[in-house]
Image 1 (cartoon, rainbow over the protein chains, first blue to last red):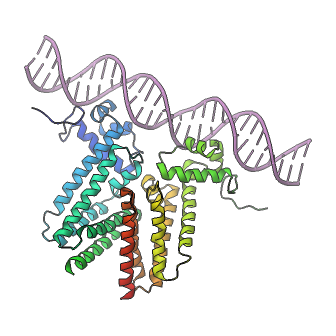
Image 2: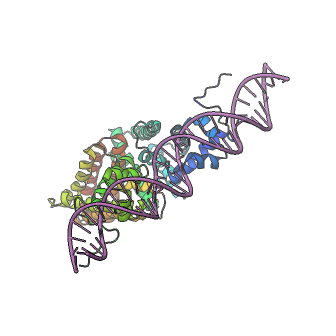
Length: 199
Length: 199
DNA sequence: TTGTCACTATACAAACCGGTATGTAGGGTA
DNA sequence: TACCCTACATACCGGTTTGTATAGTGACAA
């Protein structure tokens, strides 16, 4: 059996060491910030030795990058799930905002993990930056497709404005610890959709 | 002579040790992130000993807080300056976006220093958080006054939507290293102003 | 049985972290 | 002169950082 694995020994089965490290990283990095969490803490909390961690991910930066990739994967799944039931473009647009609002309501909300990582990873060569950009590009594409489906004359223009509202709302919601910015952005986005597609 | 000083020994004259530390902190914290810059580096780059730094600011957290306060002070000055020449509400609104665009064009642009600090300072008790909130509240107030002056029926509502566009544009501009999100937000904000005030 | 694999346990290296202790030099002032 | 203030230099504290080296353990497969 030719198994395709990028690096490290382990499998990615639910309870495997690798998965436990990734899950713990996801939680701790988001809660406390990437720089604030050391590999010692991380390994201890994952119930794994540091040696195992390094066997799987090579370095902390490597772990950070894989963690972001995993987060991106999960994020795309969520997006697909919440818009599975949607039929119209309006419903699909709402689904995106609903997805974010779902996040925001949960306690321990600390904004967008990718934006936060972008703030912390100041080195432009960091392997994680690529994944951050890929994620944001995924959202932009997603929004553009909705605008196209709605028949907007200039879909990418509308999508970018939606994106501004969305990103701004997440930042505002984080600082205020309150979901109303997202509701406001949601409303504004729908208004824009009706203006652009309906006109 | 009864001199009013909050803490530390020094004056704040242009070339003073205190001011040099603050200036260096402003540059390094913004460039590399707060956690990434140690007090050793900071003191060395400011041409000051660590003892002096601690005499003035008590702790790194204290320095971070004072640095943010200083940044807020400068930011308000900039805002006052760019809108000094403005007469109409529309001009004053544009001045805010112009102020941000001015920033964005400069190289080494790494987004809003307050948002970034908010991401890094995960401890809710950190003295810097208060200043971040004060700064954001200042912007909100500023925008609300513009909406009032323009005769919008619900000024705080319009101001919050402008804020979403502004904050979103800064985040997008940072990730893309490109000022077009700010131009787009600027346009959208003016459109909204005309709809709300003109109608 | 022997080997491989994923993992644990421990210990260590070298650098860096925030913060402090001790002592000195120079200017302002009374 | 005597004092105070500011800043200097140096050396140190305990703890943490990322990363590695070494040895051992249990499971599974040929």
